[in-house]
Length: 161
Image 1 (cartoon, rainbow, N blue to C red):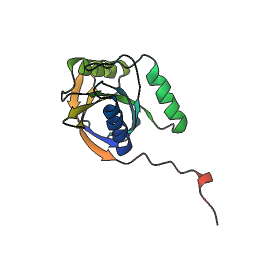
Image 2: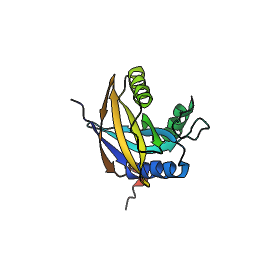
Image 3: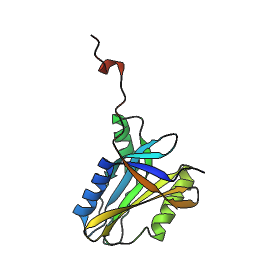
């Protein structure tokens, strides 16, 4: 059975929590970018996508922004790609039926595992809930905080002496 463990860089978690806090009491969100290792997805970047299509109980990712954002990050590191979406819930509520359906629909359409990360406000902090859709099945994930993706070494970076 495929792993339900996901590594998430601490810098991505910091980005999500800071964006959620600054946006509070309105929702905000964006995309999750990273790599698939042989054993688990590794979220290396969380990109906030600001939009007017948000409120106290809703956030809609604008059409067309995902490809542009992923392309910009791939220009910096060609190893990364789209892993899923994230958004905040200013109240302590889990993923909605709409959240789950959107994620499953994306997973079916792309034929790729798709992540859903919800940052929900618990007291004065944002707790993280993480799910993965594989086909029509959505499962809760164990999240392991990780470092950033190592920079690949190239011959030109080495000094010879």
